[in-house]
Length: 366
Image (cartoon, rainbow, N blue to C red; front, top):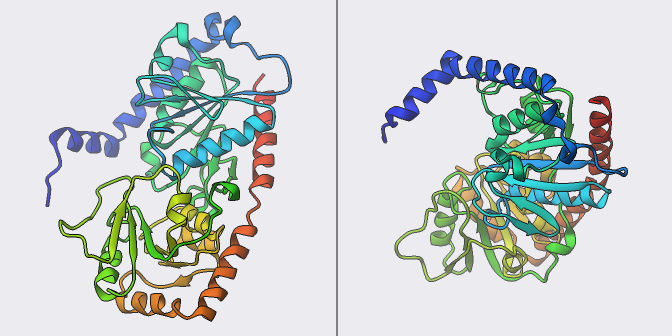
């Protein structure tokens, strides 16, 4: 077992003792008090722009184009949808050194957090991932509402300071785990069908070869089913790839355009031990690609009855599930179920509700 570093151990003890939370709560109170008396917090650059739209400033630890995991893609699609509804959206990335523009959305590096001359105007601050504290501080300094988008969940309440003015959850499952964060909305990851529609290929695919995503199941299947072609897609986190890759397996990635993956995929594997939702299986479902999945709660919410559900610890059952999809009739049934499941997506209604909630929040903060 790898021992923790002294610094990490001290941080853990500080969180458990409540010292970090107390210190940050005091800092937050001070920031808010200063903002109330400091007229510079609302200078000419930061006053509300003319027109109906809001200026939405997102803060995140990672973002496109450098990082393209589910949380980054989801936030980007949500911001694009809000921009299409008349708002102006921009992003500050805590780990970036340079500025960029991604699909019409201005993306700024970390300097925009600290350099007053590069301050990005905002009517509301929206944070995600590790940027909870950064976003809350920024909103307090600006006297703006703070919104947090919770994708994963599971962070101990003692580690979080304050309560956002609005919390967005990527699934009802994650919302249930944080019922003390209110008011809240569920905004499932939007799936834009045109970005993924393709003619499926012939491989059995796992996206992201980590232990948590089920790489052990993937490699066991490649050994047990040498007559099947497999595709492994590298993603984020430690990738479990043997020194000698079996001849029936191809490893690619990381990949920017997932349509190229689905164009080579016949069956998708999702043996994840945990998912807050199930974005990748729904992307594949656009093209009628069925999924074999472990019944993690987030996956069940996303996929309903469409997949073949198999416990990730039962490799024999995974082998049987793959072979069952070799039968053309079984495959057609599951492919139709996959298409029907993604067709149930109602992200437009959820994004409309988010639009209304943000407008109400900003109006109420004046």
